[in-house]
Amino acid sequence: MATLLFAIISLLYASIGQAGGTAFVSLMAFLGMSSTEMRPTALGLNIVVAIYSTWLFNRNKVIDWAILRPLLFSSMPASLAGGLIVLGDHMYKTLTGLALLLASAMMIIQRGRAADRLCDTSLTASVSIGVALGLISGLTGVGGGVFLAPTLITLNWASPKQAVALSPPFILANSTVGFVGALFSGQFPSPDLALYANSALAGAVAGTVVSLNYLNPAGIKFILVAVMLVAGIQLVLA
Image 1 (cartoon, helix red, strand yellow):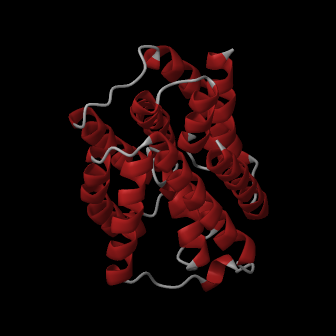
Image 2 (tube, one colour; image 1 turned 120 degrees about the vertical axis):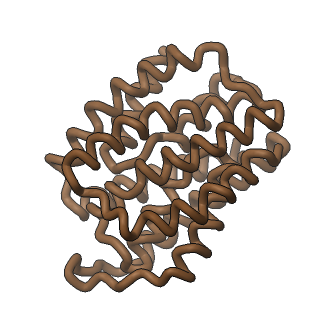
């Protein structure tokens, strides 16, 4: 049952360019997994799912690397630092949940914007946002994509479709360094990580096909907000 749920979560999240770290954390909490296992396991699953999604989006030439580079260069060191910090179980869940609720609120209050009126990105702002998102990513283990997408859309730096494509490589980079940080801090993933990873990868394959071929910008925003609200409330109340 757990492996099936990981596959379903991965499918739903991959359809909006996410690896599923937030829902993975929520599911592992429901399964009674310890907080020391939850973060590295979620990061490990993020890596597996994001590798495939990044490869597919890059092959279809839909990733805007010019927007992504400064975000990656600033977020990765911050994610590593966040991975080295060990939070208590309650603080960990509360911080992650509140961050998700804030991100969803940004999306809800944002007015619709046309894709042809996107603003140019600022290097200083990109670096600052990258550091903040990287730190949150490493601390929580959610990869950072679920915070990146609403940030880019709210600042009018990317359309919903572009934000979906930018999220997987951001998740991949920050989850990788965050995973290394978690290992160095003495946190290790579940012994069943390989089994969960295979299920998550199967879901990601189906989800990215849905994202590329069937979802429109309005649909992407609606699903993203719904996912963040549900996961955020669940973590805060856990």
